[in-house]
Image 1 (cartoon, one colour):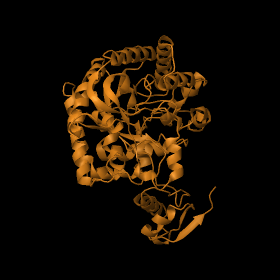
Image 2 (cartoon, one colour):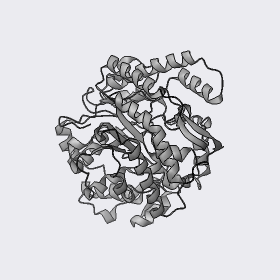
Image 3 (tube, helix red, strand yellow):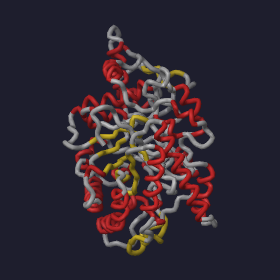
Image 4 (cartoon, rainbow, N blue to C red):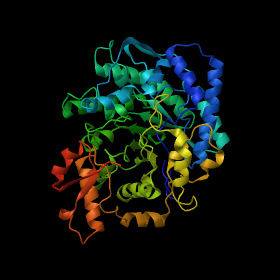
Length: 475
C-alpha cells in the first residue's frame, strides 16, 4: 500500500446501499421471508455497481461496499455459532447529557433492526463459504471495473466482543481469543483472494467511552493490549503487508467529547501486526491529532491512512482542505508512507441515515474545481442509484500535484472564520486562532475576537482560550 509516484486513495468500507437492497436486508433482519436467490443476485449487482463507481471516482484500493453485510460487525451472526444470549446495551458516555442526540443515534434506522445477542455457547464457524463468496464476487467486480487493488473489511475479535457480551467463557481474555480462533478462517480466506484484509477495530477507541468509561486509563490500556494480542493471534499466518487496521471512536452523530485521545493509546496501536493503520483525522474531534506525529515517529515499514474526508457530514470538503490534510501528514510521516482515506464507513449499518446520498450530484458539481483537474472530494462515491455515470467524471483522486502540496504547506486559514466551536477540542479552537494570527501578523493574537454561533457548549471553551466573547447569531 505504498507509492512513490502519487498518493494512493482508499476508503474505510461501507458505502450506501441501493434502496431495494436495503429493504431486502432489513426484511431478513426482521425475520421476514426473503428469496435467497433474489437477495444474492441483488447483492452481486450492487457490488458490481459500487466497484465501478469507486474506480470511476478515482479510488485506487476498492471494496464491495459491504453490500452483503447488515453491518460491519453484526454480520458475524450469519457466519458463527454461539450467540444466543441476552442483548447488549451501549451506554455512550458522551450522549448522557444530550438526550436529543441520544434519541437521534438510537432511533437511526440502521440501528433499529440491529441484533446483538450475547455469547452463551462455544463459538464455531457455521458458514465456511461466506467469505469466499464475498471475495469471488468482489474479484469479478474488480476485474470488470479495471481495479488493480482491493480490500475487504472484517470484524476484529475485539469489536465482536464489544457488540456481543460474554455469557459463556471464564474470562474476557478467553472470550476474545475464542473469537480470534473462529475468525481466523475468514481473515485467511480474504488474504488468499489477493485482497488486503482490513481489521475493523472501533473497540480500541470507542470502547473506552462505552463499556470502559468507568475504568481507569491504565485498566483500559490492559484491555486494549489483550485485543491486540488476540488480533495478532488470529492473523498469525498472514503477512503484515496484506493487513490493514481501522481504529475509530464510533461513527455516530454524538458530541464525542469523551473520546480517548489518540496520544493515550498510539504506543499500543503500533503493536498490532498490520502494515497500515486507518485513523480518523478529518472530523472536528480528531482533526488536530496530526500534531502528535511531530513527536511520535511512524514505525519503519508502516503506512498511515488518515481520514481526509469526514463521513458524518453533508458538507463537501473544499479540495484545498483535503490537500492541506494530506500535506500535514505527508510532511511529518513521509509522502510515500501516506494513503488518503476516509474517517469511517458511510453506511456502517444497513439503512443508516447519516449522509444523504441523494444530494450528492449538486455537491459534486460544486467540488469539481478547475475543470475536474484538481483533487476533489471522494464523497462522490456516495452516489446511490439514479445518478448518471458522467456524474462520476469529476476527479476525486486526491493525487495532489506537487505544486499544490507546496502551496498548501504555506497557506493559512482565513482570519477569524465564522466557525462553530461546539464540542471541538479547545486546543483545536486555539490552533485556528494561532493560524489566524499568523495570517494577520499586524493583529496580535491577544486582540483577536472569536466569532462563533451561540450554542451553549461554546461557553465552556472560551474561558480556556482567554479570549473576549462575541456570540454571533446562528444562521
